[in-house]
Image (cartoon, rainbow, N blue to C red):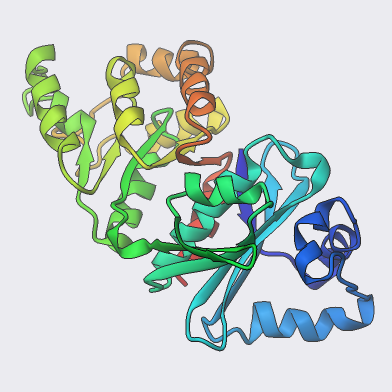
Length: 321
């Protein structure tokens, strides 16, 4: 999976490298191809794009979350016409793995969160990246002199978000914080399935409740419930997966015993042995099915994976400063 990474000044060696690579910059032939980016220019460029940007510019590396390796960049900036132009570049050797598609979707989400109504771009008609923009919801405005102008209205793009992962991983806390920042309605599957007396609704009743939620234009849904997970993947636009070590999930689940929670209709008095075993078995029994779905939808959904709660905290900080 791909994540956005805010580079430090010392990390600009990567940008210098791919901007000097002819194959990576082949898309830019209409504007001169490779672009010199000497180290002497790093500080001034960094100050403009990442320090004193005035919310008129945004820049992040694309990073492969499993390896931590940089694979490309995404950015937007306000040009002299008062519009915001998007940009996505993936190193030539990394193309064909969905990094560009996922990165562009993350860029659109960041722009929308920062109050930008629409993104544009101008792409040479022989540039394969046109397909990436179209897949991300951009539409062709016109084509002139071999240049295609693309536009996406971010205001009309509904957000339908699912937050999944092991119990105790912190997904419900993240879902609440995301709700508080976005204003989207939040639904807990545990609240839909369980009754205050400890009993549960029938499968038919649960499915009816879920169907009514899925019909909504925008929402956040917190919870796994594997039987219906495929339906939620079909309907959602964004996925947040908490893939944390089992021990941290056990500690998280134990820490909330005896506390009132808005995502559960009763107060847990003890760490139920069956529930504890469910968490222990989650990596083998649940996670493979989840990963299969994320792979299936990786080109059409924005999927973000957190391997630590600190990563989720950092995501909220940069998206909602």
